[in-house]
Image (tube, rainbow, N blue to C red; front, side, top):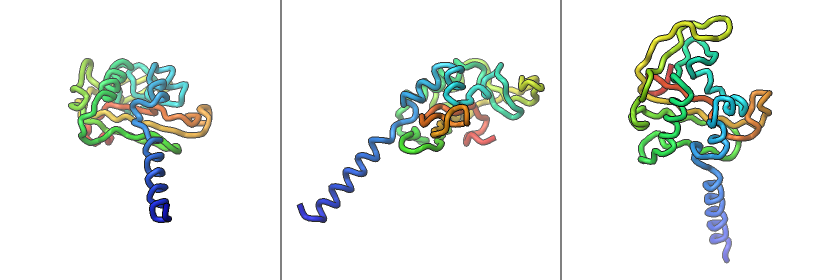
Length: 173
């Protein structure tokens, strides 16, 4: 094989290998494990809980009515393969963060109790006042860090780090 063909073959193998390492975040084993329960999410380093009514939160945080409401929307997102943007994020390789701001209509619309934004909290982080919002999109955020969970990392695994309903189509605010 001449050198040109060898270089092309090596380049193709590198591309194929790199692509194989990236995986749809929604379906990785560790992300799936991190959304099995609120406790699993916390234990793996996630903080979806801050966006669930009844859990300690902060002023300005938007919240799902229940953990089930969040998991139902995420389960729906895992089945969407319509070719529209945003495309599902790829989780592979080194650490970092990825997010997907998904329009609510791609998730089948908002179902059940309205989402809310916490407007006041007490000393324990319990929301004492809130206002309902009309959800236009849901953000799903993934994270991977080599640090131990107790040090703020995820022990080298991709997890569902955060998720929240948003009154803004771009998931801001």
